[in-house]
Amino acid sequence: MRTADIEIIGLAAGYPGNPVLREVTATLPGGRVTALMGPNGSGKSTLLAVLAGILRPTAGSVVQSGEQRPALVVQQQAVPPTLPITVGETVAMGRWAHRGLWRRLTRADRAVVTECLTRLDIADLAHRRLDTLSGGQRQRVLLARALAQQSDVLLLDEPSTGLDAAAQEAITAAVREAAAAGTTVVHATHDRADARHADHCVQLRGGRVEAVGEPEVVLAASA
Image 1 (cartoon, rainbow, N blue to C red):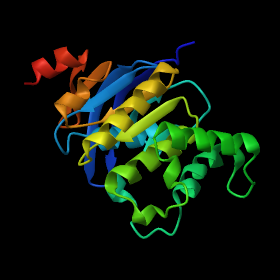
Image 2 (image 1 turned 180 degrees about the vertical axis):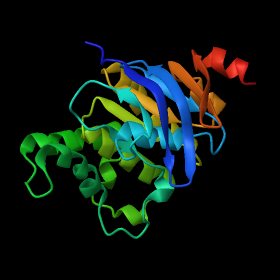
Image 3 (image 1 turned 90 degrees about the horizontal axis):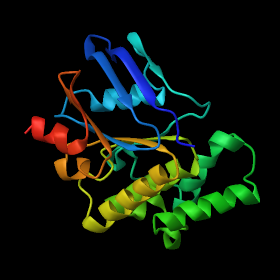
Image 4 (image 1 turned 60 degrees about the horizontal axis):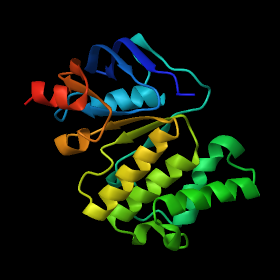
């Protein structure tokens, strides 16, 4: 069955002294890839934070089914480069949502971790420290960790920005595969070519929804 749609109704959110989102209303189709488009400061990251449950809205609501916490992939630049942890350990953190912080991973958990490493073509890096990887490799690790969470909602904040072509292709393929399996994917991007690979598009400007619909239609309207 296709994952239920996410309904955003009259949403307002922001930070002390800095209201960002204003009266945002949109439907994000379940089991599909939605691209959040808009210039810097338009509210893309703030909307992702609300969807992830990190930021509480000041008005309006977000209606989404399921009890699983959404999986969030931040920009790789936000990860401390000197974090003393291996690739395998990083991806295994995705299982904490199921096992808890202190319980040992089961054989099934380890199988999920191995599968996610393989899907992102980084299984050979499992014993490498995170701080020894390139930006593209690290972003694949972060996506693998999110996929290991096995949530029905996957949120990504400009996941392919500044990465080489191989990393971009690997991330795009993994995202499409997740959506094909029923996961609702929402990713922020400022890349029009990247948005064209999505099934649905929401254009933000000044914290408000400017356009919603099929990517080609939305992108043509905002050209």
